[in-house]
Image (cartoon, rainbow, N blue to C red):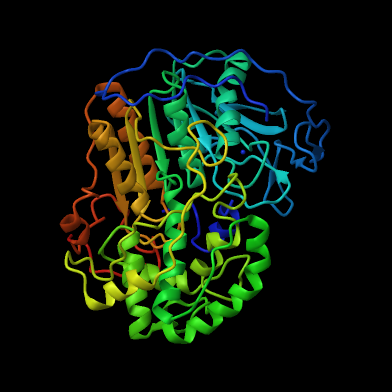
Amino acid sequence: MVRLFRPIGVLLGLLVLVLGLPAAAEANPTPAGVSHPRPPQHPRPVPEDPAPTGPDCTTTTSTTQAGYTVADPRCTFTGAGYSGARFTPTLDAKGRALSRTYTGIVAGAPYRIEVPKRWNGQLVIYAHGYRGTGTTVFVDDSPLRAYFIQQGFAWAGSGYATNGYDVGQGVRDSHALLGLFAGKIRPARSVYMTGFSMGGHITAVMIERFRGDFVGAMPACGVLGDKKLFDYFTDANVTAAALTGTGIQFPATFEAGQAYAPTYDGQVLSELPKLGTGFVSGNPASVSLTPTGQAWAGVVQQRTGGVRPGFASGFAFWSSISFAPLTNVPFLFGVYPGLTGGTQGIADGNLVDNRFTLYQIDGSRRLSPAEIALNRSVLRVAPTTAPSRGLSGVPKVFGDPRIPVLSMHDIGDLFVPFSMEQIYAQRAAAHGQSRLFVSRAIRGVGHCDFTQSELQAGFHDLVGWVRHGSRPAGDRITDARAVASPSFGCRFTDRTPGTHPGFVAPACPS
């Protein structure tokens, strides 16, 4: 089976949004059952920027973002440069074109559109994930591109006009594709929304903000808990510090955090021998934890979804790799929000809040002496702002979809943890919409580590749900006993030999 993302390679493309059209009214959560929304209300087509011309791949200056450039959407751009490949129609086994392709730039955001020659009248919008803070924006293909074309679906994706964790820009630019598509082809009969990682956050916000424009959504490995992702990164760091007796800080601004980074780097290096050995080795099997390190791993497990199969292999994997700005320490230390003012500089203020977080090592209802000591000594951080109800800063996800949402997540993912699914499920339940959310657990340690088989099955079942109103099967992700079962995640994981390398857990029942 084809793997969509290699676990380590995805990191560089994922820590990695123009002037948009007027937003719809803010979401007012109300219960809703499975329904077929009214046809999409497409905005008017928007004027396009001057497009690159000629046979060569041409990078142009952004018309909306000072200092930004826009990679040629006709060509494959990797973030570092052009690969030499072109965006051309999908071909069948005999080399015949199955589709027509369209590219361009609108308000500094590059886009791609592909329409099968045998189009079923339906469109899928694809939102990509986080791409770091570089100043060249580019568009890529949906991981399900070939499948969409084979099944008769058109698809469209934007490269957004900005990089960084700019969910609001991603929402604006992705939604603008509806009007663009209607102007170039014709209005779609129905529209689905999909997105990976940060694109999952965009997906969750999009379907709540633009009511009626979408009939179903499939976020994958998504940040469905909005600012809870930054809370989790903070949890991992402050608990490691508390357990090792290290007096770390949480600077109040982005600038102060950057100045603190060298000091923090030294503090982390002093912590590591107390936690274990083999960190940042690139080989998960060489990571060995001390009793203190095992307690820290227990806290991380509880903060990322609870006791579940394969967690130890996931923890080892993410401990064996590093990430900027601290490339000589384990991944979770490199993404400490205290180095970036709380939210990587995208929000005007700090969103992190752990004032009332109860940290546990083993998940028992009764706190142990070690857990009591941990909660007394851990650094507490108070927020200075909250998730945005609009599209500025870090937009809030209400958990109020009102349309079918089918999601999936690797249970060993410690980049965007499995707990994001549980948070969304709880919010949907609070709005009386549990029947509109289905989540599927995948037994992998990587981020967005899905096979074509897993993704195709998910989208196929979402379409059937929308068309026929029959809710597909999912996993009981908020049931602690079900999550802790040795067979958790087996039902929807592609078990073809060689898939999901690095995930170690009891074998699934045959």
